[in-house]
Image (tube, rainbow, N blue to C red; front, side):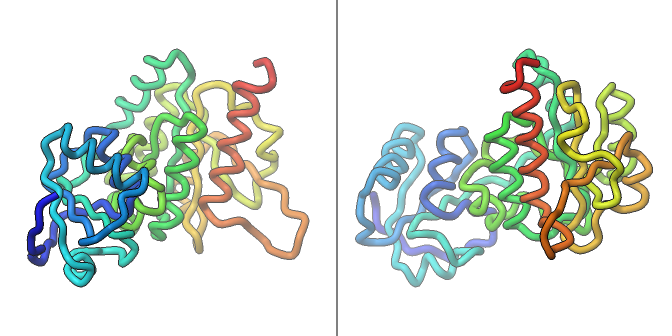
Length: 257
């Protein structure tokens, strides 16, 4: 690991030991990796260095102050990768991935989610549940940012994300592809456990404050509610997505369907 001085970097970063490790495992295009001088070589750090050497990616030792100047999140754990801009996928790629795996497509649609921690948490759960991708709008929503990547614990390196200019049109297109579009809404007549998610399914999750927009709601085949028995009226976007994604796991893989 060579010593170098980090200039101010405005390009995309992946920050944190786990996130950088997952970026390397996923074959993400990385120009170099910055590590804090004197960092202890525990298992994740050692694997980062090993994989970087295997892929001929420079690893530079820099001061903690210099890392802070480069960091977008302030939570880098002494490791930052300088990466190419994220590549967004298409809905068709997600459907093709499901076909390759021999299972019905399962896609999450995030309507206006702006919190990178919520987006990252959804990506982590989507990957764990075997979903085939996440669809987000181009405007008024978070994208694949350093904060979202870190919140996902690197899962965003393994999840296809499509960024669409018109989400309501995309939802209608998913329906035309034969997918059942289910919107999560407190006013839904069915519950998440009472609807069939074993076939091709798109799960629409609304924003933290506004829920699903009226235009996107109009394209949903069904509105589904998650029962609430306490004083709070709703769950946040990432928790709602997790509840329904794991209902899909239960129906698809654990109940003999």
